[in-house]
Image 1: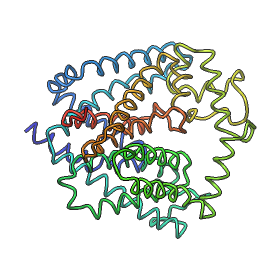
Image 2 (image 1 turned 120 degrees about the horizontal axis):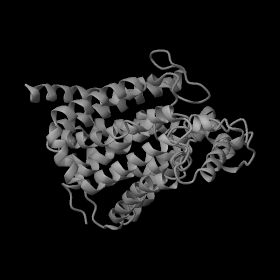
Image 3 (image 1 turned 90 degrees about the vertical axis):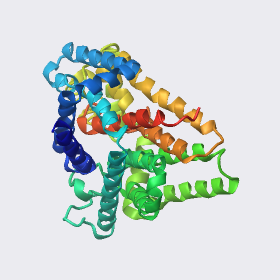
Length: 407
């Protein structure tokens, strides 16, 4: 009875996983929370086994958890900070539960991919309709060159797609023997998703997408003919220039990106203002920081005021958010994860053999590199909406890396 119930719930969890993030924060928290709780009570023995199997990363995670908990308790805004840090240990259960879910159940892995690719396809079709008509099929409107789709007034369409796109590409090639019969639909969805990311009007998504393409270009550099390499490079250049051929997306990307990259005027450059503010916080609190997710409160302090843009819910850069909120010791384990996957990826890059499995695994690693890239505009590291996405490719990597030997 227990196994049957868990099977049905896991099926429900997989089907609703990708669409739930489109609705906001509530449903991802609800479904992922139930997933964690049920596995904690019904799969505790298996979770313990996995904990000891992945003992080193699990211990590192727990040390990081205790560290951010101490940072919260010693901060000036304890209760608010604890909202982000107290239950952070649940991500470890979540990651281990995902390994349990997908490791030996190929049906669940394939169902997960199908649900993800259908979600991308629907979002892309709806977004392209919005691009040409001004509103999507249910009436949400694009504003100042930014597409909304079903996200409504939350401008995260491009960010969401670029976060899950490398994961789906990775699963596709890792499970290619099964999915190649659906190649036309899958690649159509990939192309539409790429176009949607480019035209979403989100600067961060645009930059992340081309970082991903650059990483793919590195992978192919010594594995394909020069002609194919030149064609791929020309394709990247074409995709990079494509949104600049349209007035609304061109204005938003060209004018704002150039402003943020070149202007030192703090009254105009909001990102630079937030970055300087967060750096000042780090200088004053270099070890433990100001407490997880406390930037929104401390930024109003006159000590850290640099312009009207000093305050926000987070500094919009993971590196600076971690430095300011949990200090240099808190940054080290997160950046260690980044460099670990960067090194693993470079090992694949220098390989001359091109296989579908190594490319799939490489794409999963790229997703983690993109999330943690130090100089990228990012979302709130401690927001659960991002957290449940961040830990997904790490779990998938642990599953597939055990099945593939590329060293």
